[in-house]
Image (tube, rainbow, N blue to C red; front, top):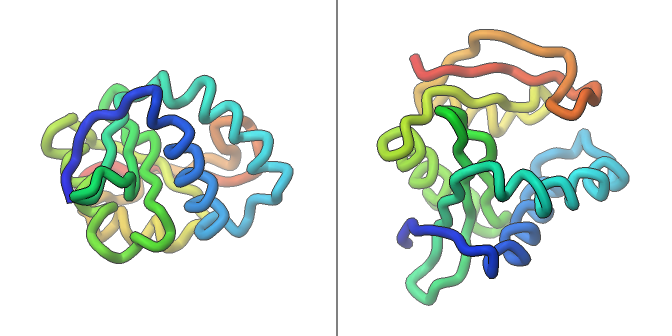
Amino acid sequence: MYLGSVSRDDYPQLIQIWEASVRATHDFLSDADILKLKPLILEQYFDAVALTAARNEGGELLGFSGVAEGNLEMLFIAPEQRGLGVGTALCRHAIDQQGVSKVDVNEQNPQALGFYLHMGFVQIGRSELDGQGAPFPLLHLALA
């Protein structure tokens, strides 16, 4: 596995990984929620962050992260790649190379919360609404 840059040509694959990952881990979101978010992710959010891709030796995308202003804004792993170190590698890169010190995680996603706590983050706050104003509470985490 190696980490590298992302081009706009990768966006169709990235959005496939995003959707598969969200469906595997965000069981609190309805199909309508996911369909509402998908174009925002593809048309706005990807361009608003510094994207890093994890790829296998053949160049196939395994997962990706997005960083902006010291925040880990997105970290999504292809479901079949979960538990194999892809997320850890992307998160370590974001911390060590991109200066990440904060991340928000959905309260209803205990696996992600456990992952970030394992990576050295601690909870510093909570919001009742997510970034789109929907009633999905966010936990605000910072590196300890």
